[in-house]
Length: 238
Length: 238
Image 1: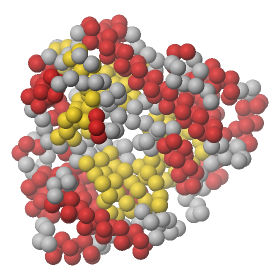
Image 2: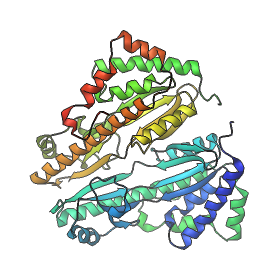
Image 3: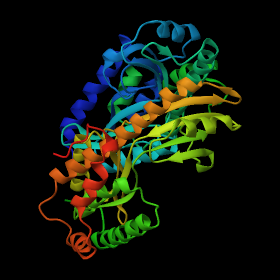
Image 4: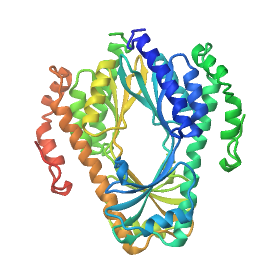
């Protein structure tokens, strides 16, 4: 197999990103729901995780729903929202259009070679991450893979002063937005399960040692995060 | 460069797909707006186009907006819609939830090698196709690249018997749906322009000969399709 990536430099970055992951978790930058999936990826010797989001509900005051500027975001939550939270935002004046946007999980992985990138794409597709692909190849940064589901929903809520929802409609919308957010969390759980079921023969020794030394027990994290009651009956640990 | 793809077999498939493209166009299966982009891709010796959509507006009766079953689709159009078209559908009974979904262009390209796949991803990103990546690598079928923008909009219209839009809201929605459909068509035009500006030194001789023999004039097709008045003032041929 052709060497597209410099193994030494790649390895250094893997350890850097791994350490940063735990710092981010400590200061609350990292969404905890991602943890089991991130650990599984990093246990693979030829993969490490770069950046990820477990899914979120936002309200954006922007011309188009795909506008990426953070300044447009007037509300953001990684957990289910309430009717009051939605209604409160719709009372405030907006400058453009107000969109409710629910997005599913998105993950960026760096792999050491093409075989590993293709293995990960296969695993991701088994878990329903159908919009996944290799984004770029860089000698130092590795082969960058993006994993994404089709779980996404936008709803136009308000245009200038005209609200498009009534109080009773707000309740229907909130239910559906929360349902779709949980669909995303379930996809993350499925991804964890596929990663677990398709572990390579040898795991990354550095990562395993780190987990042991820090008393991080993956099984317990999975139990605590993915088997919560609010995730509904559809999630079952098999 | 490592040979991931068998050149002879790949070449045979390129010609098969190229011939099918013109058959599809003749019987109305191919959306004409795609033509200049498809021709540009196929003129590259190491690329051919597999399947594509220039963007569409659909109404889907399904539990979730990302449901892919064609049987859920109760309305489909690749051109702007009218208020009456939307209202007529909302009068009909539905079984689940009625979603208005506008999607931007999506293209699937096969390339002969990794360098070409990465070149295409670069060109696509210049044109705003940010959700693009290599999906798979197959010795015979080639390196499969998906090109997609973030241009997408869904709106929940009806849940069982409860309609979520009034007549006046329908008019706002139709305007925005059409606006977003045209955003997609403009992205396609940008992609054409980037492909044109980044042509490889040598073009595919078979394709060039085919175009000459069939009197297909790319410039004229571009003029006719992309410089139409209804695409608005934002599109300018530079």
